[in-house]
Length: 41
Image (tube, rainbow, N blue to C red; front, side):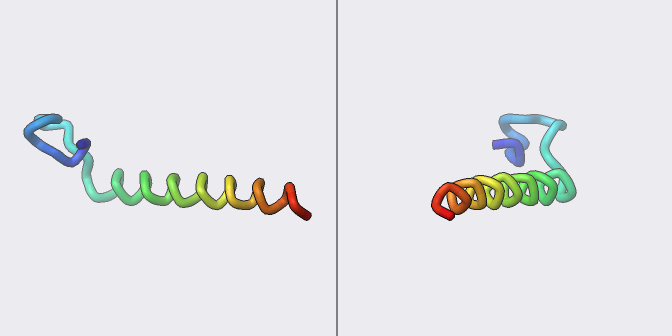
């Protein structure tokens, strides 16, 4: 949705913002997976 110019107008995400968003998503997923694994160790 944030890449859609029809919805966001001039405020669409650029490539750097998209990359940062995906890096953040992957880091949060990894932290969650690490927490779940640590419960069983």
